[in-house]
Length: 396
Image 1: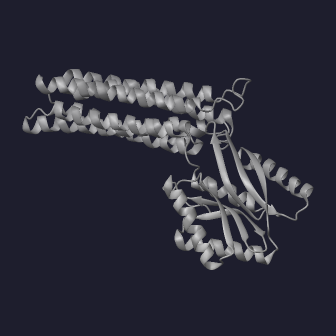
Image 2: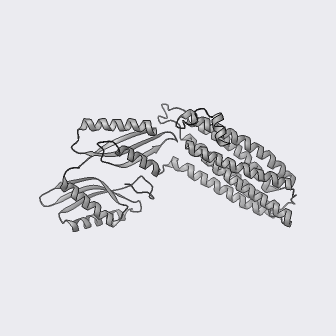
Image 3: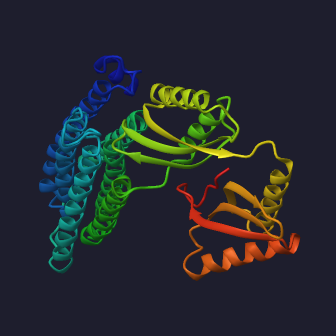
């Protein structure tokens, strides 16, 4: 069904990097969501009134809020594709994240309303009316919501849409909420126990937790999150694949929306290279990055020693020292100033974020001490920095 809808309503559906194609995906997903949720609202509201069930009626209004969420998602995707202007030179892509956050707020609001209604019913319960047709309709509703969740998740991953992924999580929470309402009706029908208010409380907690999770996931790119490890590997391998580039470090990616990113990276080049030829290579890499990744990449050249065996031996010694201390440590921008009595080893040390404050000083002192044990002439000049990659993934 998903592929049928995509091929039927999204022109050039395979060109997901194009703004108009992403908008078409968003429009189609929103229309499907609005239609399904309005139908579910009408069906559940009728059943809730018939059965006098607060959990079913609350679930019905949850579907109505989902229809509003689909509208918000559509508006967000549409506005996010606005081109850059004088006030927003990087475009409007982050509007999509804001739209997803609004969806999270709507989910939280529904969960809180359900919570207060359930508390009231807990102290002042009403009689329920059990009908098998109600259970059947609600069961069909669970099936629809599970399909909507998979539908939005699949499309959200395809076009990298936070709004669709938020809608998917919301739909999955709705399926759980409706399943709980079915459970309370079955318990009443079989045993005569009215647990509607208790189930309503449990459902409200599930809905509010879903809203919190959606908000957390959508706020992350607005605040600034670590680079995706897969993208990190793709970009570094891409840059290092060009002749004349001997290594990379300090990759930073700034996200201005799902289809608009800017990045900077330090590329290590031989210190005896021809400057104009290397600059031409750098320009070619930046152009190719824009074509392949849709990425505005800025490259800083770092000249490094690649031939002097004495420098390379001291660099290898330092790398061996830090490897034995903590395998997560790494160095770059290594330089050596060879004096008559002392040898200055100058380098940047990349350390995990757990090294803070006094720990940084202790780390530098320990590295210097271990290096001097290898060669008493060595004096380390160390700049400690953190990686922009997640702590769970180490730089190469």
